[in-house]
Length: 95
Image 1 (tube, helix red, strand yellow):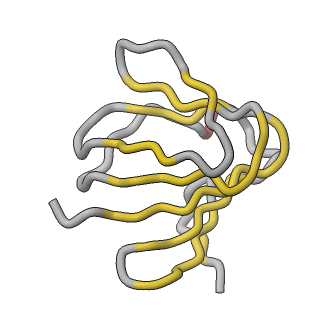
Image 2: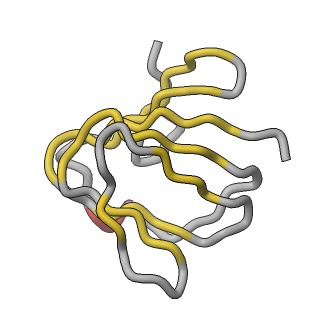
């Protein structure tokens, strides 16, 4: 079951500490804001093309399918819109 929290994505729980997150292909880029998370996360790209991840004071990096990216807790970052629906598998670490 997918859930929406008024955020620009929908989440689907997988198991403890893991979920799928979907950003629709028609999302307005103004909804993809700079933010930081309370816990470290590992994201794995499951779908979407030409989407990018950008950390504060760094150039954006292209998100590659089946590749893992680590986002340290309290690190400012954002997603930059690409093509298609972006699907991420997210694992929240316990730190």
